[in-house]
Image (cartoon, rainbow, N blue to C red; front, side, top):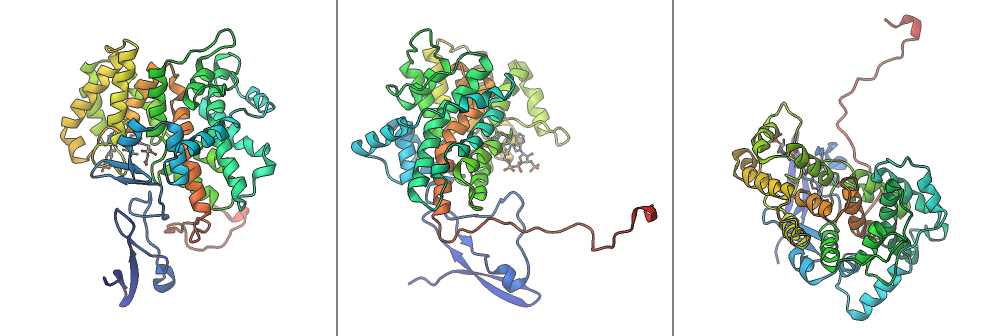
Length: 431
Ligand code: SDX
């Protein structure tokens, strides 16, 4: 029988044993929950580089090996053998569905694809040129105003119906955000189409003629959804968990996740990456931008490169590059100059000492913008697509957090570096 492992902290001669916990795979953790009570000190880890905030059984990433598992299944296998609805079922329930379970899951989601008709007026309050992410944060947050019958998070059925409503309605809400900016009418969902084909119908269809989705493009977008579905405790997922830890309703928590995802260092990187490629414009200018990315005095970063966890390749970037080839081939866009520029930028960056030393590899956002642009998705909507796909991950992580007996309201401490206590001087006496 192996002895339980522990870590010893000795501070001013005071020694504390802290238990070491092991998971199924991946690094062990030092359980520091008793540290403050025993030693009167906090740990300090801005950005949570070395801090595990929870236990989770949903997703595992091996940053050194470039591995990504959803419920133990490698992303490479899921992207080839499954569709997004199967992956949603897997992430939410922990197992891949059999045929009856899949059919029932798809049926339940299809019966929630419409939004309350009054919600369509919500869009009218935005300017036509509003960024779709601003619209999505508002509209998803507003959903809780329509579902007073299912906001009791202690009720398992309420939690399930809220999850199904969010998975079902995000495509409708995202497509409506797009249609609103174009001035075209909103398209009602079509339940005779698959989840992803229906999204493309709502995005690109019009009332004037039947929209016939291209199966190759539907499959490509479905794979993009799979690749973005979940990713451990990234910034937006941690935002959802922290929001949910206060007991906030799931619609408000997902709206908070969308807001966080919008940042260019996170989910906004795909939009920023395409803008960067368009700004570079020509292969001859790549060296200038590589130099800028290395210049500490220049805030420019190579968007779509680097990752907090992946210190080797991001397996999603490889799959996204394959999808890029497929889509550009299907559309006869092999010579897409941006794709060629991206391939050359990737090649040069991966040969550069700085990127090798800092282990900066292309991440999921590097190619996704090129694929989405080829699919006809406007640049401003790229992060909205990311939010649509990540909703299943957010809601599954929220669900896991609610059900975790060890979870309590998230309330980090701090290292205070402000003023010592001092007395107020009334205004006339102030210098
Ligand atoms: C996503 O967490 C997730 O899982 C996120 C995500 C998900 O699915 O949820 O995978 C999705 O957000 C992917 C990442 C998309 N963001 C970008 O592509 C934006 C560009 N990348 C960087 O901003 C950065 O790499 C981060 C934010 C992704 C990671 O930042 P870290 O882990 O905090 O690393 P860091 O900023 O401390 O960088 C380490 C070093 C630094 O140099 P030094 O200070 O050590 O000298 O590498 C440098 C950085 O300057 N660096 C870069 C760089 N990224 C890091 N230099 C140039 N270009 C870059 N892109």
